[in-house]
Every structure is written in structure tokens, then in C-alpha cells.
Length: 638
Image (cartoon, rainbow, N blue to C red; front, side, top):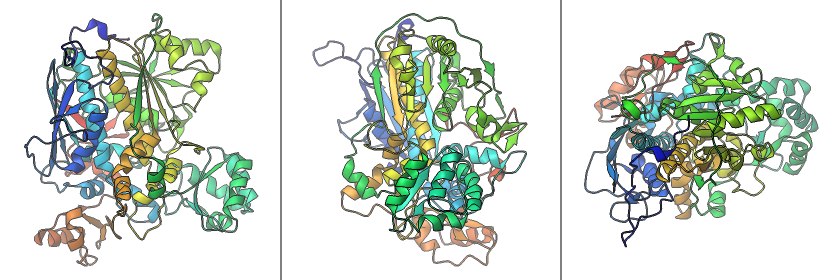
């Protein structure tokens, strides 16, 4: 049911005043609040930037990130304080992981949580991401937790403290790969090295994208690729989002190397596929000054009255999965209890955003096409349901609606009239064409938070298809994630789909809080994969603008081989650890040798199901009602 803010007597910052004593208008959700941050920049920079962009004023008047007031939590934690007129102090804490487990920085967190193993699949060996991906994701999750706590308070809850952990964020980023690895059946495709991008005859490196097997075949036929290679290449290409690798037939790579980029572009256009040249970070820095917010919030016009809600059916609930400490929402439960989210998402970005809202206590109703989401059947399965699908959709309810049919569109409007949030990631322009855009739904629900998670946010001229790997290619992510001396290729781990989903959740929470602070007025919020790329690339692009190299040194975050596995030194210990030859030692012996020299290192996880019993993690991995592995919440509330 919708929950207009007008029923609440007090909201954060309600008595914020202008200098003349008159009430100040709230335009952003954190207007009138001040923030204070302390701790290592790796843990605090992203959350400081996002809180500032949402309206929080850094203590001391600094126009940039939050400022430290002299508190020193240590190099292993970040601390945040939000307070202001009418708001009891809200505090947050960010930690790398469980103390004493060796998870103490980005490198060791990537190693333990399986990120190095997944990202390294295309290379045939574990590799660390050359950018601080997990710290970035944790910053966004921390902003989420603080916003959720404020929404819960405005609705009668009492959370006063939020804790987030980088290792739990890491588990969330690999949750689909983890669920698939622990499924009842093997993968449908081979997990082996290889994948895009491709190289043209005139040495242009490019990414290819199509979701249509017919377009795939037509593109390769135009380049004279062998029929058998075309047929054999489609399935690994199609599944690369799910497996983080794509062992394509070598004949396909040879086919592109015999044609110039102009001819390849013509073949793609004629086939209905798309290609995108890999851009550099320098090119991205030149075209964008870096000032755009990663999401946009816009109040909606007031509209009509709610109607009844059609019945939805449950898709299963998790068991054995920790949900953090209660205390955020009405009655002491999770912060979003009593909030209803209507989600019409596909693939990863929007479903993940809604999944996190559900973990925060919201009731999530998923809109699926007649016959249900076809991805429910994507192998491998647990109890007959796709393990990957469960990782993003467990615990949601479902209603089948054919949005092409007028009667079903009316049903969707009825659902939205009683919801707090409508969230989708349809193709650009589709909602407007179906009269399901924000203005249409606001006419029936003046308090609706209408959320769109897209690809490019209309900020890139002549942008290609807005999918993870195309956005990686277009923005220079491929260069940022690999150290100097290596080919700048996009990661086949879905970095931006996941980070884009986190931004979507953050944007919805910001919209809910803004609604609470503006008398129940609805809000449109837009997030994008481009916004996620901007957040992730901000440090590298700053270095480019300063005339510095944006890439780390050669060999950065390359794990060290042992006789029976791999170990990853912390970033601070990597140079000294690289001087040791550990190939003749088992992993435990290699770790003992490095630690005896005062160096920090940890074993690299390559067996994802083994994480369920890994004592280095700060949260327990459980199993849901279908038996699929389920990661713990990334935040806890007290």
C-alpha cells in the first residue's frame, strides 16, 4: 500500500530554516543535514561524494567530500555521522571485513570473496581488478543503508546506526556466479578462457553486442566466418553475462582481423547487431568534465486516487540467510517494512535493485510476461529454478502481465496506484509509448516513486546499445581494470550491471526519503550504467585530468602461484611479496613465509561453493528455499 508522508508528524530536517528564520524548501533528500566522515579515503570517498550530492553539508563547509573532525577510527574502518535540525544523530561504519581474518584492503577482499577468480576466468587464472571496485560498491551500499535508515525513521522506525562490510559487498557482486556454482547441475556452457573484444584488420579493438541469434549469424556470415564456428560461438557469447568468460572459436577472431573497421560496422548495421570501439580513459575525460550526478531526482505532478491491488503470487523466500540486525523500520523491523515495490525488470540491473529493496524489508511484486520470466529456466537450476535467477529474485511475488494488451496495462496501472515504487528497465521510449511513463502513473498515484534504471541517461550522443560490456567499452572501463602493459579489455564479470543495480536502489531510497520530506509528493528517479561507470572511474579520470597515468603498474593485483593454488598479497605488501618464489610451497606454507616477513596476504578463492564455510567472511552464506546459495545482507542496522 502507498504510504504518503502526510501521515507522519516528524521527518528528518523538517524544521530546517533559512538564515531569516523562514522554513527552507527541501529540494534534495538530505537538505539541511550535515555529514562528518573519518577514515581511509578508499572506504569513505564514494559515500562522502554521494551524500554531498544528495544534499548533506560536509561539516566545516567543505564543498567537496566529507571532512574529518579529528576522529581516527584507524585504517581498517570508516565512520560517518549524519545530523541536523530535527534529526537524532545517525551513524555509520564501514569495515573491510572481520578483524584478524586477513581481509584488510581491496586486494585481499577481492581475493577472499571470489572476485579475482570470476574476473580471471577469461584469462585462465585469477586476476584482481585494477580499480577499487569493492570499495566503490560498498560506498554506494553505505549510502543506501543511511538513506534506508532515514526512511525507516520517518515512518516510525528507530535505526540509529548502520554498518556495511566490504567482504559482504564482494559476495553480493558475485552472488549470481556463486549460486550457479552451487547448483544441482553443471553449467550449460564450458567455463574456459576467452571472449570478446575483437580486432579489425586496421587494428581497431571493438566490442560486439546483440541479443538476437539471427543478428549474430547474419553479422558473421557477412564477414565470411565458417558456418560451424558461427553456430558454436553463439551459446558462449550469449552466456558470457552469466559465466564471465566466452571461449569463442578462433575462426571468429580471425574473421574480424581480415576486414577493416568500416566494413565491420556496415556488417553490424545490416545484421541488426552493434559494435563499439574501445575508448580510452583520456577520451572519456575529454568528453565529460565529471560533474554529473550518477542519478537524477525530479518531483512529479500531483495526480488522482489509488485503486485496488491485483493478487500476486510468491516466488519463494530464503532460509538460512542472515538479514542483519533488526531495528530500522516500523515496529522495530527492517527499514522498508510496509513499502510496496512494483518491479518490471529484466536481466540484472533492475531486478538487483528491487532485490536489495526487498532485503531492506519492502514487499516486491515482480511483473513478468505471460508464462513467466523465461530466465527462470536458465541453467543451471536448483529444484527446477535457475540458480542465477534466484540470486536476483528470491523472495519476490509475481504477477503475469502482457504490457502489449490494453487490459493488462490497466491492471499494471492499478498495481502502480497502490504501490510506493514502480521500477523498470525497459528499452528507452517504451514506457512512454505504452502510456506507462511517470506522468501517466502519477495521475493515479500522487505519492509514487517512479524509477528507471537505464543505460546512457541520454548523456552520450550516438550511444550504442546500453548493455554492460558496451558501456564498459565506451567509457574506458576496460583500460581502468587492467594494469599497464596489458590489453585494455572490458571485464566479462558484469561490473556495471551490478553497480548500476546498486545505484538504482540508492536512487529509489533517495526518492522515498524526498517524498517523506515533501508531504508525500511523488518523485521520478533515473539511474544508469553510465552513472555507475562515472562513480567507478572517478579516481582514474581525476588522474587523467592531472596529467598522470590512470592505470596501475604492470602486474598490479596479480595473485602469486603456489603449489596448490594462489595467494594475493595486500596492495601494501605486493612489491615485497613478488620477490618470493612460492611455486614450490603449498598455500599455507606460502602464507606463513610471507607473514613471517611481516607481509599481509590471503588465499585466493577459486572454489566458489567453498565460500559457504570460509571462516574469513564476516557473514554466513546460507541456502534459500530452493537450495540455492544465498549471500548475507551487506548492511546491518541497530
